[in-house]
Length: 309
Length: 312
Image 1 (tube, each protein chain N blue to C red):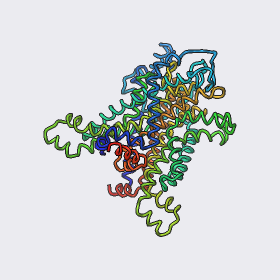
Image 2: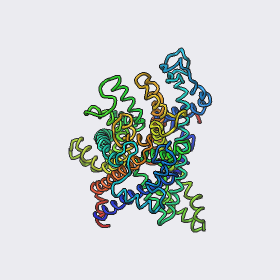
Image 3: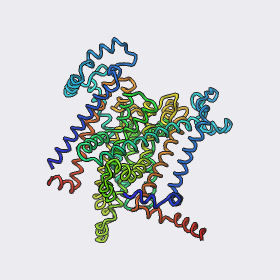
Image 4: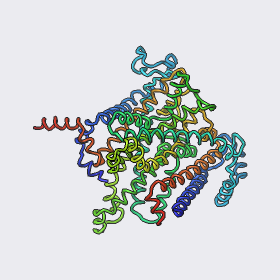
């Protein structure tokens, strides 16, 4: 088990190094780094001064060392627009994104497991067909458009929720619903499929024949075995929530890292872009590690393999 | 995977008959045909109408008969026909998405085949790199890549393809590993066939249909990705048109002219739902374990009976 964890952790660490190197190389691939960090209309003197000041005219290995040393000290450069350390700006925005992603994934998981399990237990029933249509629509609808439709229908016309911004819980309803839609749709289909497979197993017939209530058979016996594919897909979806956060935060005006990224791209504030990449990258790697561990925990086969490896 | 076998067994006329048997898949196929035909035929006809400014029709509401069929979906803030803009924008979105998907299938497939047929560090490095890329959010990756290179049609196709290549590479690798262990490949090797020949003459024909099926499943996702990028201002740039960009342009008029955002978004939704329905059906008929479901459906049986009766 310890060996398995170490292996996974090393892999995650290698990925992080890869991401950091990729950013380093990408900046230099596109030509003059001063072009990326400075506004498009910066003068040639300003560029030369910037290059000299930040060592972009040093040899590449020297630059790499300085770059890695800076990152290890938490130094991602200074935001041009805000003149604050980039890392600090990103970390200020991070809690909003984490909250949005957490609420979205939790909501999607609960809804998808309940609806998917109930409809997978009775294939082709009315509930199953209804769930099928809803989950297909949720998985196919563009999130930015869903956000606008919700704003128009429920906030502008209905007056039930604020149109955008942050504040009390009522500000979070529409963004969470929007970010939930796609993970919910995909997950429901997976849960349903896993459930249909699980319900065909002989122990289900055993459970029924010894007189267990159907609810217990479905939600305790069958669902337990349907968990593996659910955890696998939920991990991928957790990663893709970052995609949702970029769009949802931009539409609803939530100050999170997704919106920060888009704003930074518009303003050509590269220090912020780089800090966003590395902070989200680190989170995703930690998350993947957690999912691997959870997976080993609920899948006895991996647990045993890991013990004997 | 016996995709090739079941495809061959299915044959084109048989596949059509199966398609007619499934109401939803059939409807999806009809919708997609309309969308594709609309773009191919409509775009040359409506290209000028899509950019013709007429301030007397500014923010014209939809479904008001007196302005003619061109303005059935209303007009935007400059009085341009929303219908024409959706048709022309759809062509942009679809051509970018389809090209990106095909590039990703070909490049990802080739990389995967090479990884799967060569042991050792090439395979290991490839797996780690694809692992890395797959664990990164696609939209984040795309936004950052576009930041580095400035948006244009080619860059957009390239960026979308790059975000999808690892997925195809992994599938192709797994399939190639599986296929290269089969007897006909061993036989070819025993007869003295070289590696390129085995790769392209024996392994590729088996793996290619699987990858194309995966591409069909993936197309809806690529369309959504392109639309999101254009919506965020990182994809197609004005005066160009794409569905995502049209939704973004209409967003400023949400209070006064809802139809500007609603209809392009509806076009995306209808297209992606149809693609998902059809690719789900395609996966089902290509999976021998699930085929009985379609083959035994009532309509298919009735159709077959009618056809057999007619032949006799």
